[in-house]
Length: 517
Ligand SMILES: Cc1cc2nc3c(=O)[nH]c(=O)nc-3n(C[C@H](O)[C@H](O)[C@H](O)COP(=O)(O)OP(=O)(O)OC[C@H]3O[C@@H](n4cnc5c(N)ncnc54)[C@H](O)[C@@H]3O)c2cc1C
Image 1: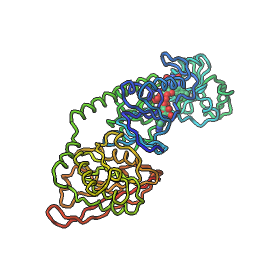
Image 2 (image 1 turned 180 degrees about the vertical axis):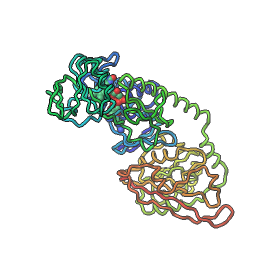
Image 3 (image 1 turned 30 degrees about the vertical axis):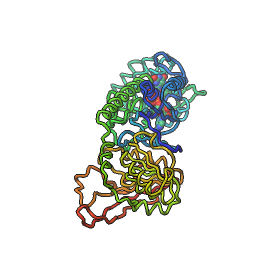
Image 4 (image 1 turned 90 degrees about the vertical axis):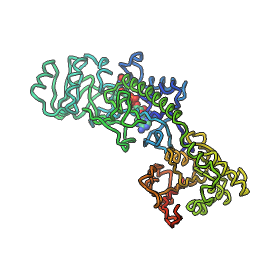
């Protein structure tokens, strides 16, 4: 488990032909890119790769090795691991690895490929990629003119039966997988000298990885030198099904729907190679990755210009808010923080959105070494002045100014990270910031998020653009892995207040306190 969340321009999930090609374009575009790869490319069963111009007959592992070596020249990292979950955030994507590490990026390219689920026939799977084959364009030439068996597994096997005849005039089709054959279809196969065996295949016989014959249910064996068959294709996309991205049905199953650049129905997620295109071989996967890599770069270029042109709206808003001379907040510690921190052993604390610094000052007075972080220089100045007035030094109460968009500004390790009413009427990537801040909590430390569960009773709730989350929704939004985080408090607390018009009212706070295991 790493202590810090890392931030990338692009996270490429899957480091096969498609993923590495996308990463190459991004690296060469000076994009900080990470490839997360579990290292099991689909063609790993084959010793030789064909149909890839310039690489004819090489070991497929060699292409991956070379690709990785080439990427080392750029700002591209390759991390072994499996992605367990991909989420969209306010300003990009968040990727959770199986080992609990979380990574954030502006964009994700999914290039995780497929698994070929083979029929459960003894002797078949162990020869996959050697003499049990799926694609004649990849391996047909190598077994040309031999006696080739076509083991059909579905009506789609008829396509294979026709195709393979191009590579040999001695083809045996095991037809049980096709279902009942129409007379015309049977005659069509027979017309080109194809032998038909109707009894279901029960075993594939051979020596080492060489197929020699096929045994059928009727007890007969048929000699063959190679077998072509199609497994069921299972795209590796479980980690994003909860996003409900558009899918497209194909004759071989349902796959992520993408446009010509590989973009899915999410503006932040591309899917390339076999995971979205069951027909793709290595060169097609490489070209899809190349296309997505360059389009993703252009998307980020556009974002960069949009942001620059729009100006720092959130900074301006909060600077303005703290610009006057009047104190905005009460100067007292937030009630929930006061209650909860009183029960914790003082250590180091980080307060997100520290405003005028009351929480930081209170924590420092209880013996914590407290840091406040706020987007507004005016707020931080007020915090520093109030801390000095309370007799606290910089080691006890420190204030940092940051819009929290840069990972460098959200660094360190804290026993307590707290965010009280961390809402902004001007857009800030709140969840993303909270998740990154969670990574700064030391093992055994706490994350406390206190928020408005509902609009104040005197306010027009419909006029609020802010989405008020109840405690459970807040927890779900944080999306922190249960194996790493224990939920200590998950509740609502009512707080008596005086409304702006002087009436007594009650505010409902949602409280989420988590302990890092
Ligand atoms: C036996 C066999 C032989 C083949 N021979 C040829 C050939 O000769 N020529 C040819 O052009 N094509 C061949 N192919 C097809 C070729 O394998 C595919 O077209 C190609 O591998 C697709 O590339 P890809 O990048 O989409 O997926 P892959 O190459 O399968 O790469 C996907 C990568 O993503 C990783 N991954 C999966 N899930 C996750 C996750 N959750 N988190 C992180 N990483 C993940 C995998 O471990 C893998 O490293 C062959 C296929 C088979 C089955």
